[in-house]
Length: 224
Image 1 (cartoon, one colour):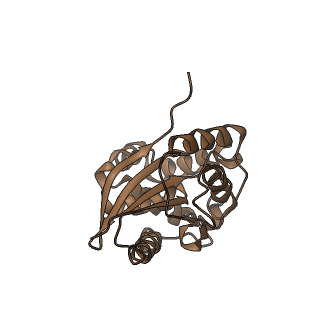
Image 2 (image 1 turned 60 degrees about the horizontal axis):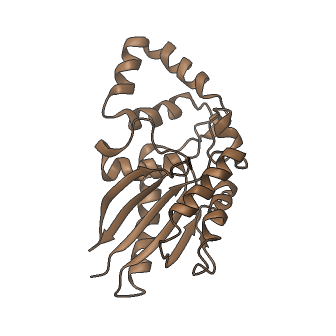
């Protein structure tokens, strides 16, 4: 049975990332640092022959994907998939990260706050925080975003597995929180405390209708 090798890429650093602001369905361009890092990632992946590519509909993911796919002439037309877009922060879009931290610390007290951040359930706690602070009640839930990304990646993997009896390499360019939601459900102990880095790649194999984590959060090295 063929195996689908998924290369899950988080986009490069953006202006809102650099400003330490929440960035979900809001969008901003890659910084110079983000572009250079995406170029290093493109070189790191240059020897991988990709059979298909799927990209979030948000501009920062598409900008990152263009840099990567420029080195892959075999990819004629990547597919834009709304299911790969970032977590929706609702009314918290664009909010400073420090404001979020301060609000939670005030509500819970420093001791409880520290325990939650250090706990094994810290990712679930993080999304609970976003929901509790969003007065518009438009922010996605852990269940909602996990279901969305699971369905999307399973649909893509099934579709690609039906194309050939041979193994296939599939590039996925998406976002930090939504990919972290998938990995938290797949292998929670392997998810980094600070989640996925910009221009990191995580490899997940799909075979016999099952996902298996191969490696996580690998970033390209800077040239010396």
